[in-house]
Length: 113
Image (cartoon, rainbow, N blue to C red; front, top):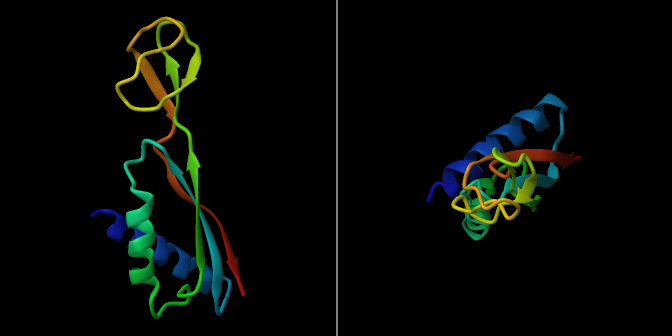
């Protein structure tokens, strides 16, 4: 379950940023996760509860926004939503494409007091 290490990494970043602005409490963390990032949302939420216990973010809401994967076909150069990494271009049926969006994991915002 690599979601535990991801949750730990997020809380480390959040704790550092909260300390940098002298916050006493983190109330909300917004995270963006690409559909091809390989992160199970339910496992991340479960892990989140474990790693935040006793921290400045113990009562913080973790809000996850899923980012749809988008690929660009290397043959016809059109973009299309990518549902899984073994898809084909719906325009020209090529299996040669580059994933432009959808593998990311980032903290997009924090709310602190």
